[in-house]
Image (cartoon, rainbow, N blue to C red; front, side, top):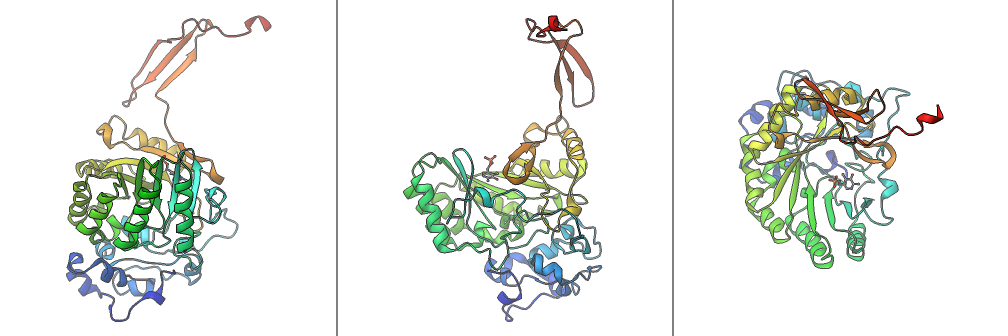
Length: 395
Ligand SMILES: *Cc1c(COP(=O)(O)O)cnc(C)c1O
């Protein structure tokens, strides 16, 4: 299914600048708002100032989709607005010739079980891609190979075979539903998929879901949906927020609704140049997150997908950002920073070194050099005092 004009229902008029200002996103159903998405930058020119008049080739690579709720959060006059940067197409996307970008940088296709949409990369847990649609499209999407692509849709048969695979492999104890966004499905469809997993795969101990719809179209979260999640004992819902501006009273209200269903919530964030590569922004984001009772889980580096190179934050900068958090804000507000290794290597933690064991000058044991969050250092004797440097005699 292509998120594009083809789906647009002319009865659901696009909101003008004035109408958008007066619009109450909680006043209509999520389906109705979903149908009101802006799907071309020219439509947004009527709503926002300073929209870049991008080349149509951008659309052949990746569609545009912005809900009225999300458009409302954007700064009308400032193209540098951290929300605009995440969703508005820009000239920077018109891929530079020769720039090395990949559609499936993480090599997920290689770890996909044939005939299914299950990525089985790690032991005992699988990623189950159930949908190729999202409410709002992130310009840095890691799954541009399928999300919003006409040939990227996940067929019903694939879902059936995926459930068969999970049911038939008793070593799988953790299933992560993702996409696209699983919450683009109706409650009935989710009820069916989750019910099948619970019924046919009793060996699955942990059932979780990643969704950005909670943030992009909060009214998707309803008591009916939460009842479905609770019924099938979904244990964790991970949301994705990149800037504190995305946290609104409506989002807070719907997060609470999920939590009341007894579901633990995590936050994932993508480190994006010009959006959140800033210590103060991340501190505020993660503190607001734990205030909501949502535990920051991962900060991902931007993947090397087509048209996202301008968002990439170098690893040395990510180490500095981490150092600006650890020790400076509440421990539970500090997530793990990771880079997903190219070609299927998997997630690799990006962790600064605070404690380093070094061989003593006399070769008799080790010294532990410690550095704290403020940069104070101390040296202590290593614990391995019986450590011997091997083969001194060979010299
Ligand atoms: C991230 C990911 C998971 C889940 O990893 P956790 O570290 O357990 O959250 C599972 N499968 C794939 C392919 C992933 O990319």
